[in-house]
Length: 103
Ligand SMILES: [Zn+2]
View 1 (cartoon, rainbow, N blue to C red):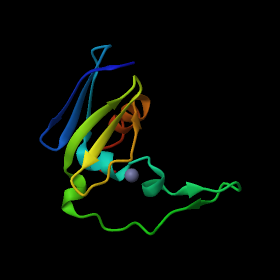
View 2 (view 1 turned 90 degrees about the vertical axis):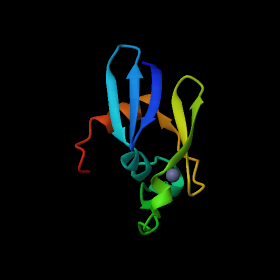
View 3 (view 1 turned 180 degrees about the vertical axis):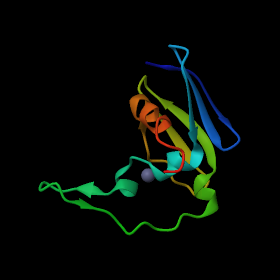
View 4 (view 1 turned 60 degrees about the vertical axis):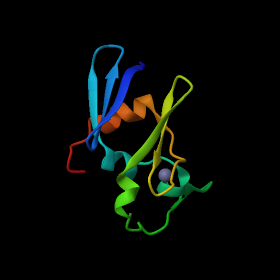
């Protein structure tokens, strides 16, 4: 499964896959579901997750300024607030696209 085209259209990330399927993910969802340790918390050996209290994100946190392809498996968006450590694997993107839009 590979994206053949990825574009930000307004506030939605549109992905066209090589099976001709298309995924549309609100940019805000992408940021809120950022899989990096800083956003999702770290898990200790007991399986406990430590995460900071959700901090209110400034509006620029939801503005994507850049999008980098990482090898053949992920994309890494850069956000206007300087955050750019989240790697979104393609199968994770597909699962985000299938979430109800009011998540
Ligand atoms: Zn993050």
